[in-house]
Amino acid sequence: MSLCTLQTGDCFIEPATTEFYEVELTSCDEPHNAEVIGSYSPSGSDWPGEAAFYVDIDATCSPMSDSVLDPARTPATYYVGAIMPNQDAWEYGIQEAFCYVSADGESWTTSLTS
Image (cartoon, rainbow, N blue to C red; front, side, top):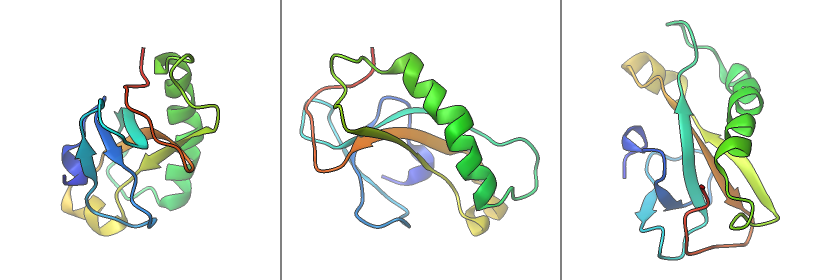
């Protein structure tokens, strides 16, 4: 699935590389290792730069995970990440980033959100 069509609650297989344009969506009942927990759009129309996106991960995605994840279903080793556009995608008009949770080496067969 194209990254710009992701939605909150989508479960997927996290790609092994750090730069990717598609993810493999799965049913949350099937084994997967990542789930979209929300999205955000940085303010302003100019490319904010990668450093600003990393600040947003901490400022936006981490608190989002605290409010939406079900602790009983969330792996102890989970981490919060973000899928964000690069500068070319931004200038093309894709200006939304997606917060997600994943866990190294683990997969699960349920949604992690409450």
